[in-house]
Amino acid sequence: MDRFVITGPCRLSGAVRASGAKNAALPALAACLLTDEPVRLARVPQVRDIHTFLRLLAHLGVGHQDAEGELLLTPCGARRSADEAPYEVVKTMRASVLVLGPLLARHGHARVSLPGGCAIGVRPIDQHLAGLEALGAEVRLEHGYVDASAPRLRGARFRFAVPTVTGTENLLMAAVLARGQTVLENCALEPEVEDLAALLTAMGARIAGVGTPTLVIEGVESLGAARHEVVADRIEGGTYLIAGAMTGGDVTLVDTRPADLAPLIAKLAETGARVEVGERSIRVQGSGRLRASDLTTAPHPGFPTDLQAQFLALLTQAEGESAVCETVFENRFQHVPELNRMGAEIRVEGNTAHVHGGTPLSGARVMATDLRASACLVLAGLAAEGETVVDRIYHLDRGYEQMEIKLHRLGGRVERTASTS
Ligand code: UD1
Image (cartoon, rainbow, N blue to C red; front, top):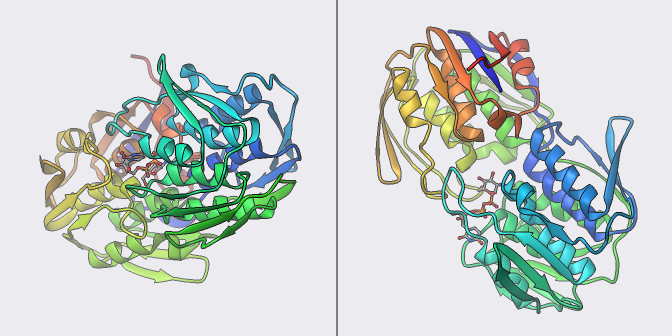
């Protein structure tokens, strides 16, 4: 098992380009189940979740090959009867649930293992299932699997009780091939949903209301070939901007969509970092002393829960008292005890972390529990005095492409080594 050895403190400076968004590439891959024609995807990140999903797709009849640096997905005539995402895959990657909608729409049947709990909370999929039922699917839960069938889905009106990102994506992919009109209300507004809608539209789907909470979909008989470039990863890019601010550095994120990062840009400015926003770039310069700032996570366009851990790392270095309230997931403060071991002073009460900021961090051996918590510990290690060892880097490898290389180029002293214990 690999780990990172970080020698701090480092001041990051330079330009960095985010990879394509993992959370946009995953639904894009799932959308390939909706057609018999080739789909070409550019800017797909080389991360473990994508490789896992490609294995799942191969099992479901979609093959892939490299095409001049892009990913070409084509039906490979594998077992059509499978229509199943098995437990072994779903347990390693919850996003496997994204095959449910497309399989059902295309083949009239899908069997997907229930994801169950995970490190950051319960994370039910009841809204995915209620939406599919509204479209006429018969959904049964048995032996830990969702078994859904419908000879042909039919358009309907469905309102999400909570805005859910993968739930919206699943329903969108089901509705594009349903008979008639579907109206989805209270949809998630995350840029990744918009990116999926752009791909589906390029494949021939008819979707109105993209970028608003209400999506209106006119079902079509079939979808065809398309090429699509995956949107830049706002969470990965945001992580490097936070690292720049927190290390008193000067980091420019290039080839990105600043609007997707508006909530982070506003928060960085509040802490006293200097932020310059260009058309396709964001530059952040850490000031001598950062100021405390309160934060509440919320669905887009609120502050993303996927940047909460990283921003909390920054707030440990901001003078004063900050309160960070996590409203999207329960149990998403598992990085706190590890930050405290490095010298942070954070107290968790319910869904709020109270930070007494400005305490010096010192390197320590720490353990990551999930993807974003791992990134938070890496940032803390960059700001800390001495050596930090972050174990269980496989969490990071799920979602960050070449993180140590990108940090290296920015002047971070980060080495990947094989763990001996
Ligand atoms: C996606 C992202 C994840 C991010 C999250 C929130 C992917 C692959 N993952 O996860 O990185 O942290 O959005 O931005 O895109 N909920 C229900 N019932 C449901 C579905 C969700 O109650 O059927 C609740 C969840 O428990 C959570 C909230 O809704 O409290 C938002 O979750 P959701 O948007 O569904 O997260 P994911 O799509 O799983």
